[in-house]
Length: 294
Image 1 (cartoon, one colour):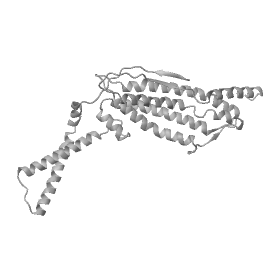
Image 2: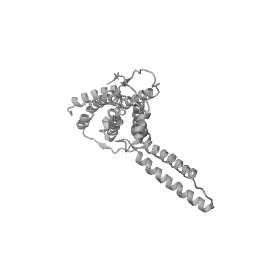
Image 3: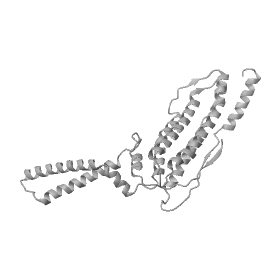
Image 4: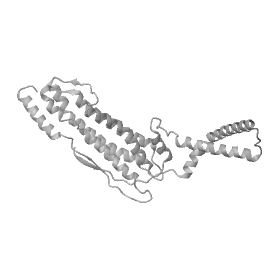
């Protein structure tokens, strides 16, 4: 399973220009107009009440011009806030930071968005796994007393792990880079990036379930040593995903005004204790076969 996977591509950094933002803001003209009228009405009411209470006169064009200017400033600021805090399609459940990046779309926003989403969506899974590994979270245990049944379960575990690595390769080397790619004719889509990251999150969660299953399964007493050798097998997959973090961070730090290249590869290391596990399994199967139990 140990190996390196590399990806080579040319990325063009897309971004929203001032004209693009103005076009988006122009769609909020009703919001601006209504807030302008509301602000003017509020300022006029307060001003009239204040002048009546103090028994002073503030009339003339300068008086109304001041109220109009204040109303325009407040309504414009409110409209800008509404635009910046708007929710892009599909981002209803995402953080305010992710929404802001997807809306403003400054240069390299694609990579900043992917990095932010990945960090937010995997941090809780990392925390839960750490709690389980350190004994600070309970996993309901399911004993397997039959030796043959347990060995059958144990033998499929490496195959499941290899399949998980293959899926991780596809998600990290194909799906996510494809979602990040922009061109002059077709900029990257925030929704496509979110979908790619969500697939990675689900797969990241599978590694947690893999570890939970290891700890939930109680082997026959004489097979406990063999069973313990599989703890932590899914760590290389999570490490591969964390390597993607490093790549995204590198891109975010690039000078977007210059043509630069980054060599990027993901290395999936060998799971811990795999050789010890294979030797123990070979000896176990040999011993059981020799006495006719398997």
